[in-house]
Image (cartoon, rainbow over the protein chains, first blue to last red):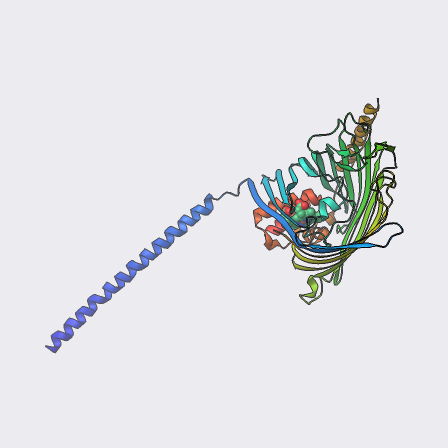
Length: 406
Length: 91
């Protein structure tokens, strides 16, 4: 009985072993074939994926913060009067601007940047560039007019080291037209050009200027350009000169023959002197409008003035980028002096200067927290008889600002 | 009469500017020292001229291609600089 029992047990075992082996084998084959099928499918997918000629992406920036102002106005022979204000979404310093870019075959680039400034949705630029040949880019549409370095290169909140913009650099702004630009080697040096033909500027009744916009105010157009030289082989220094000419009077107005010439110079120097990264930037602008007769708003009395405006800024910033301390290396200190002189005896004549002191903390290369203290002093040189207000205006501002490029 | 004068002045500026541009374009050559620069070196030298040097990890290969074109319009990089920098950033 026991032998039979033992024998049957042995037989059962003998049968069970190949059976188990076969089952395991069968399972492995199922797993293998599922995996293999999946891999084959993925391989097919990868093979099907073409690099493509077109690429679309969204980038952009946002800046927000808090500002506290104390404005003191001192009328001639009077005691100063102060007004204090504070605000979060201050229109001058708040912005959310997504930028849409479309690249086709590395030949065409379309860029469109709408911008919400807290009050309105405007457009910073909307244009197309064609990369025609080495050193030749042709662009058309609505773009920042080439003149100096501030507007086109430094104004973005995550680039600017100080919270506010220097005064008097709004012109020539963005305009509708066509342009050519390019950068080319010159031995160990480099040079660049950026020229445009656009609708141009419009002279307002008080002698100020603004962009004419999409419908030109006259038949004449505006020619503007900037040429720059990078004389050192490591590109750390760039010097630029700019020139502009535009007819500015509304057709049929008393300003029909008015025209504007602008010229400017700029400098940009960025170099590491271990452990510090030193950044020096500056620009000088001059605007001349041909002599015109203006009329007061109240009784249309004629008056005239030499319509010349100048603005300049010089900025230095220092960042201890080479130190070992992770916290310290992300700090940057900045200082900017700016000056803005508008025409004496116009109703908006003044001589303004401003000092800006900043302490920035770079959270990433494109994310910054800024603290800026600014003091400006403006002495009016306005034409009282024509409605200008004499006196001195001092403004002290404190900003806490956050900006990110995404 | 005046209007014609204004136009001819604008035209003159345009002619002078494009004349200067074409003379310079045709005389442009880079030295061996410049040709030998790597994409990494050009990235380190050029991108900090306006903002902090961007990290290569921030964008994908295709995004860097588009950004390369975009920055060429802002920084007036030469075509060789752009190609080398984009190749380095896409690695």
